[in-house]
Each structure stands twice: as C-alpha cells, then as structure tokens.
Amino acid sequence: MVFFFRYLLLNVLSLNKLEILKPIKMRIVKMFSSLILIFTTLILNFSCKESGKTSGNKAIQKIDKSVSIKESNFGTTADAEKVKLYILENTGGIRVEIITYGGRITAITTPDKNGNFKNVVLGFDNLEQYVKQNPFFGALVGRYGNRIAKGMFSLNDTEHTLAKNNGENNLHGGLKGFDKVVWKVEGVEESDSTASLKLSYLSRDMEEGFPGNLATTVTYTLNKDNSLDILYEATTDKTTVVNLTQHSYFNLSGDFSQLILDHEVEIDADKYLAVDGGLIPTGELATVEGSPFDFRKPKLIREGITAEDEQIKLGGGYDHCWVLNNDEAGYRSVAKAYHSGSGRTLEVLTDQPGMQFYTGNFLDGTLARPNGGTYAKRSGFCFETQHFPDSPNQPKFPSVTLEPGDKYSTKTTFKFSTK
Image 1: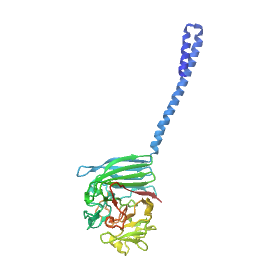
Image 2 (image 1 turned 60 degrees about the vertical axis):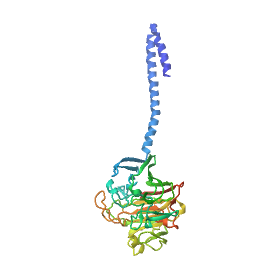
Image 3 (image 1 turned 90 degrees about the horizontal axis):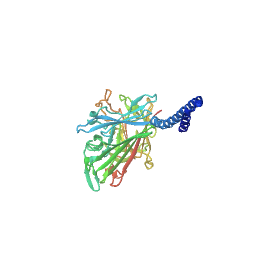
Image 4 (image 1 turned 30 degrees about the vertical axis):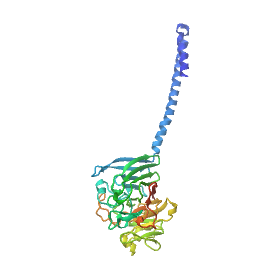
C-alpha cells in the first residue's frame, strides 16, 4: 500500500512543467505524505504487537516457573575431590540443600503455620564435619541400609564377609558406605513444576565385601506441591544384595535445641520386627497391639519412648523396623509426623515393605550445631524406608537379592505441609 502511494506521488511530482497546476500539486503532495506516514505507523504498531506476543509468552513462562535449582561449591575432600552444593527451591518456600558428598541432604527449609521459615533437618554447614565421624546426617545409605548380623551373609553358596562397624554387626554398608563417597552429577533438570538432581555412584565388585559392580543412581525431585521425591535405581553384573535408604534426621519445630518428644507420629503398621541385644531382628513379626509400638493412631513420641518394655530398653528408645501395611499396593502413604507448636506436618509415601523409625537415641551432645550448641539425644528422628534389616540371612523376609539383567527401583516421598 505504501508503495502504491509513493507511485502516485512520483507521478504528481512529474507535473513540474505545468505551472498552472503547481498549487494543486502541492496540496496533493502534502495529502499523500500524510497518508504514507499514517500507513507506515500502522504497520510498525502491528509488527510490534506481534513480536510482543512472543516475548510476552516467554516472560509468562519464566514467571510461572515454580521450581528452580542452583549450584555452588561446598569444599574439597582430602583426596582433592570437589564437592558441590545444589539448592532446589519452589515458590512455596520449600528449599532443599543437597551436597554430592554422600548425596546428603544438609537442610530442608519449610514454613510454619505462621509463614516463618526454618530448616527442619539436622546437619552441618561445612564439609569438614560431614567427613568426620557422624551418625549419617542426611546421607544416602548403601549398599545395604541397616544391619547385617555378624558382618556376613551367604549368596549362591558363597559366604561374604563384611566389616563389623556396629559391634558384631555390619551397619549401613560398612566402613566406607555410600554416605562417605562423592557422587557424580548425572543431570540437573528444571520444568515449570519440578527441579531434579540426578546423582550416580559405581560401587565396584567386592567393595566393602559386597559382590558385583553396582551402578547406582538416586534422583532427588522437588515438586511445586512441597513434596520431595527420592528415586533409587541400581543394576549389577553379579548376583548381589541391595537395600538403599535416606537417613535425614527431622525436627519439625525448626529449633534443634528442642527434643522431638512433642512430635505426634502415625505409622500404618500392624506389626514391627522384634530385635535382640544387637538390634538384629529375631525373625518375629510382633504385633503392635497393646504395646508402645502402636502408632496406628497418632500419638506423641514421649508417650511410649520410656515405657517399661523390653524392646524399648533394647533400642534405648525407638530404633526398630515397622512392617508396613498394604505392601502389595506398592507406592502409598505410610507415615506422618506433626509438630503442633509450628503446625508443620511431614508425610511419608513409599513402595517399600518396611520403615525404620529411629528417635536419635545415640546422639550424645558432642556434635556442634551450625548456630551454636550441640545436637542432644533425641533432638531428631528418622523415617528410613527400606527392606528389613538382616534380610540376606533371613529367608522369610522379602528378598533383597538383585540379579544381573534386573533393575532395582524404589521411590520414597517426603511431603511437607502445615495445619
């Protein structure tokens, strides 16, 4: 259209030799110039609006992005391995901090019922304390979570000897389990609703006495609904045993100078595993009915933790594996914890047959907290979803054997809310 008007204008200008038409020519030139300016402006405005739609959509997508992930340095090990810190955060204010050393959760910041944010897991703010002896704060545990009696088991008529790092027993994979290695970052992914950190570790054949090269991945995913998914996967080239778990200590008050005795706990389990003096299951699936182990209805931890009960005495409190109901259903809600003072609630969902409920009985006040003070006995509790302790030696328990060609895969979710 603009070119058409320009064509007419040029023809008008060609009337220069006709003097009588000069006044008319000038009026026509002004009119056509105005029309050209109007049409040019309209076209430019239309183009800007169209480009604005594209850039506007991009801006909306960025605003709608409800979960993010950031990376920073956390230190270097004595073997010169760099340790990274990853922070997963959503717009609801849930913030999960994970380091590659031991795949450990170092902090989970959540709001209370009044909108105040505090960290609710026990941990440290420096690598040095994690490298030193500590009770598996926030760690990924493997190759075998929990205890194996007398540090040995037989598999396909071959006896395997493990380190005895818990009295006469093997605990949480041995002297250098998955909690004490630097995991490799396989990938970091973000979407509008999730942020995921995928870690991997190759446990070599006969590492800590376990057969087979075990290729393990663990994926942490923070969702916009304030839930944290943990997906464990593994494959092997030789028949082996696997039982992975996460060992975070929770204190929903957010005040680690306070004990967890005022937390209300609910566990969907009719039975638990009775233990001996070394906290090895006796093989008995004991009923919770009429015992301090009955959490089928919510009750305060303090109500049973000092009961005159032989099993409570053996564990120094709760340090037992509950036989979770509805195992055949797979992934389901199995436990909850609630702190009335803060209003924070933690729900646990899993596809595992058991869960170790541990009340920090062996915390002894020697480990320093980041903001002063120390971690006292029973200042945190653990919900460790898993297969049963000592399963390799107890054929009546669900199998923990992994064969070449098969894939170990299990999922647990920690979901946070307030009420």
